[in-house]
Amino acid sequence: MTTVSAQIAVPDNEDISKYTDNLTGLGNRARLISKIDKLLAERKLDPAPFTVGIANLDGFKPINDLFGYEVGDRILSQIAHRMKALLPEGASCARLRGDEFGLLLPMINDDENAIEFGKLVGEVLSAPYDLGERSVRLSSSFGFAIYPFAGDDPETIVQSADTALYRSKSRGRNQITIYSEDIAEQIKEGAKIEQALRRAITAKDINVHFQPIIDLQTETPVGFEALARWTDIELGTVRPDIFIPLAEERGFIDSLTDLLLREAVKVSQTWPEGMFLSFNLSSAQLVDPSTASSIIKILERAKVDARSVEMEITETAMISDPDSAGRIISELRGSQIGISLDDFGTGQSSLGRLRDFAFDKIKIDRSFVNKICDDEPTAHIVQAILAMCKGLDLIAVAEGIETKEQAQMLKEMGCNYGQGYLFGRPVDGEHTFQYLKSLRLLPRKHLYTPAN
Ligand code: G
Ligand code: G
Ligand code: MN
Image (cartoon, rainbow, N blue to C red; front, side):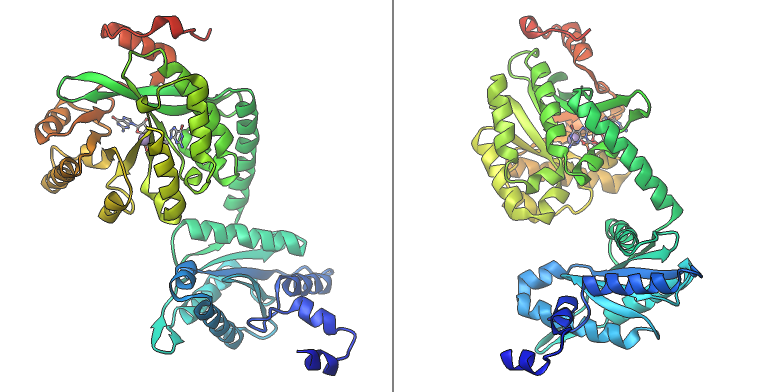
């Protein structure tokens, strides 16, 4: 190494390493930025459009995990070769980080050409990578940003391409996204919601509603699911499937959850002894090691019996980081907090997961429940899920029951609990209190201080 640097005893020696990616020999992020800067200067008088792209491999992490970093590195080097071979005149490619490659395409000037180029690169990158005794194939995702719409300085343009890439990734594999008017608008809207949401959390202005969960045999409520509700003065009612993912994405889901859980726990203390509170835990929290302890702390501080609280989690959460999800689940269960597997049957249902993780309940997704009476295959699937629950000693909860027929059928099939509009919509703490009273299930009145 020292001999090499001695040979190239030129002043910009340091610059070369500063701008080069050692593994692939491509330029690095700094190089790409400086190239964009140069192109911007050239086009100062005549701002003709050009394109910046970012390519990211799909499923590269498992390759590293499975075969080791050396294999991963070999693939990255092969990618660099392929990239160089397909670059048009005047274009350049840099390795930004990990499995992410940046492209500067001075001659690509509109969406159509960018998409076409993305498809070409995608095809070339999807050819098998030779690893000696085996070979692997990988698809890739792309984000493109076109100057001047996407920004007028290098960092902003790259950021726009990155935003587009993020969209591609969230749509699945093998996707191409161009940073567009729509995306820019959504980002502005997202920023507005984020601000209002942060304010609402600080002001404790988010509410929790409760939906009863019914024992199908006795037809009486056994617990409630807490569901977040938010109405902003300016934005109006914002649905949880908008603001929860936003809080996850922007990194403040923990403070939102703390607020919601505190509120939910407080209301649950007005319910009759033995009734449980079921709380949705967001998938982002299953990768955060502090999750279990902050939940346990909230329950302890409120002096609620942890045995009457359970966390609903979805499978998506367990896929991204099964190890930390497993640790959090065992920590919670170790404190007697129950675990329900939510939305079962949708997404990536894997039966292996039922064996590898300890659950107490399974919530059968409402997409099954609403077809159970008129679609025979659905009925068979639900029956099989119920048989499995029985064998595994899990309580089955059917979600989204809307008709008596559905409830009857599920009851006959041996489903333990049910939830849905037939039994009750989610309502606030006070209405939940009234509901219990109307059923002569005497709430613990002394604990209840209704909000005015
Ligand atoms: O309540 P529906 O009411 O529209 O809820 C939509 C989605 O938002 C559901 O998937 C539900 O699980 C989720 N959700 C509702 N409340 C909460 C909450 O307090 N925390 C989390 N993480 N998700 C919630
Ligand atoms: O993802 P999760 O299962 O936590 O979401 C619960 C969602 O189901 C909430 O949005 C809640 O409002 C909704 N929900 C509850 N009962 C019914 C029902 O009977 N029908 C329909 N369509 N939605 C329901
Ligand atoms: Mn749920």
